[in-house]
Image 1 (cartoon, rainbow, N blue to C red):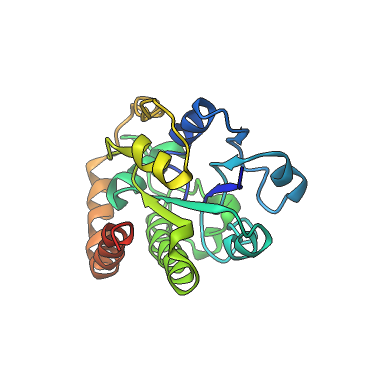
Image 2: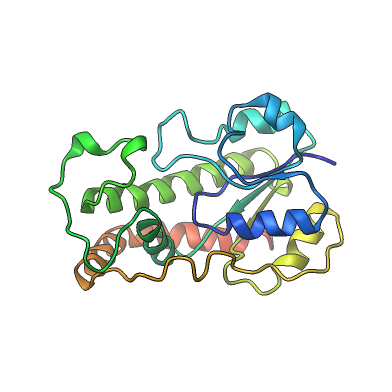
Length: 219
C-alpha cells in the first residue's frame, strides 16, 4: 500500500479522514508526531493530522520531500470554506462569545502562540491558508497532478466514493463530520465582523484558490 499523506491544514476534517482510514483497515495516525519523523512514517500508511499553524515554520509539511522520498505515495489536500475554517480554528483555540481581544502585538505571532486572541492572529491564519494551499497546487501542477486529490469532506456527500476512486480501494462507509458538535460556543459579533473584513480584503486570492480547487479533479 502506498503512503497516503493528508497535507491540508488543521480543522479540515482530519478526524473524519482518520475514521475513513480505519474503516479501510489502513494503519492510520491521527497525530502531529509523524511530521519529519521517518521512523513513524515508515510504520504507518495513512497520515491525517499535523502541519503548521503559520507558514515558514519547521512545523509545516515538507510535502516536496515526501513526494520525492516516497515516489508511489498519494496526497490529499483536504480543505474547507475559509470562513467556516477560521471560525472553527478560533473555537478550537478557546475563542468564545465572551472573548476579550488582546492588543495586537506582532512579536506574539509565532507558531507556538497560535492561541493568541488577537485580530492579527486571524489575519495570519487566513493568509497562511491562502499561501499554503496555493503552494501545494503550484507544486503538483508542475509535477504530477494525478498524485493529489483536493476535497472538502465537510460538505461533499460523495467523499467516500471520491476517496475510494483516488486510492483504488473499496470502502462502504459514511464519513461523518466527527468534530461537528464538539465546540458549541459561538464567537462574538465583533469577532465575526473582523473575520468578514479580513476575508473581504483577501477575496481575490481566496476566490482564485477556490476556482483552482473546483477545477482540479475534473481536469
